[in-house]
Image (cartoon, rainbow, N blue to C red; front, side):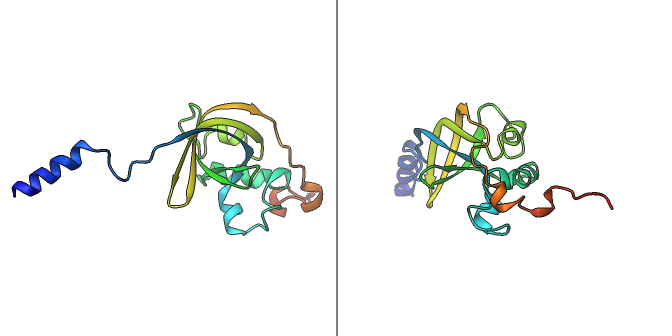
Length: 149
């Protein structure tokens, strides 16, 4: 019993093994809808970014699908929080920036091969830079209503 108490006391005095330490980074990339990007349900990676996927990204974000940031190097960061927005997944900030390319300053966390980002500051919002709707139309195609019949 004495060994158990000593071991428990030693564990309580150290940092938990599961606690992740973040690294401050600055990253530039596009705010994406992670469901469509990872699942491929709406097409390949080129079809589910930019202006072609803007409307669907709004719907997914408003519905609670996690927002991601697709960095220029291809790394995807799950965005946990954007500045002071308390509801980043469906909050006004994420909705306003869907499909936008941004430069973000924040804390990067990595666990089990996944990258997470807590955005402290959006350094610049460059609006939609990936104008690919001419190549892909609107994804999904029903996101823009047709003429009334």
